[in-house]
Length: 347
Ligand code: HEM
View (cartoon, rainbow, N blue to C red):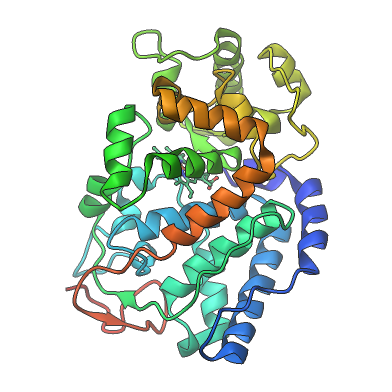
């Protein structure tokens, strides 16, 4: 997987970094402005450095916001390692397969110490990764002042995180349970324009017995590439790129991709290409495809396909809302290190 991430998008992301570097970090309104500004600058520098070194980690940081904030609110619970007292933290959840970016969070924490919680670092880093991967088009304020939780459970994460095999009603209910709308479900699913997925997350789409509509030529090209990647990545569960845009010209041609309206040179970019792909049945997950099965959601898909700027703006707003999901629970702290609670056990 690391190899896939390293190779993907390097040229484009490096050029995006140049664009974003001249954008000042957004200042939070009110409070200790200068303190927050220096925190935000530190986070931005570390995220830029990490993405420059490994473009794939940007997608991981965007996903980390979703997977932290969805489980007990934005409380850094996704970062906790298991301990002898707590053998199964969120990291072990099946729905957290492929989660990454923890080293970047650690590097930021080592620079900021007690000045900022791990929960804040997750949302700040995800915000900066979104800005960098979109070439500065996606920007939003997230504020600071979150506290770190002391509870982390794989079972709880699997109970609340949506699955790639969900149907539309399940996805809608799942988002509603967190106060997010159907429209925000469609908007945030556009994050699948970046990053990778393991075969186990989309194998149902390749099996005749379980396949939801998927373009036949795309499915065949994907199945062939999966077999190739098994050898390259030395695993029976290889990762593939979420976005057919990022798969290269030969794959796109074999998969009959109509790239009209998609910037195929923008490999690795966070943009509205997901909507072009979805409306061509060329997306990996059932949970992506099912958005087409509802009339209103399908209309939104078409709108975001046709209006890139609107998606940038709406995605930024939805990420800001996601980043503010309140932490649940009764015990909070600012952790000394992000991988364990200060007393090294969980309530
Ligand atoms: C709507 C329900 C969602 C489902 C069912 C879902 C499911 C998944 C799955 C199964 C993967 C691949 C994991 C793997 O096999 O390694 C994935 C990857 C990803 N997801 Fe989602 N996701 C959803 C929503 C979101 C949201 C709301 C965001 C961001 C705000 C997001 C961002 C990402 C990113 C960026 C990746 C690639 C990560 C990487 O390359 O490291 N997803 N998602």
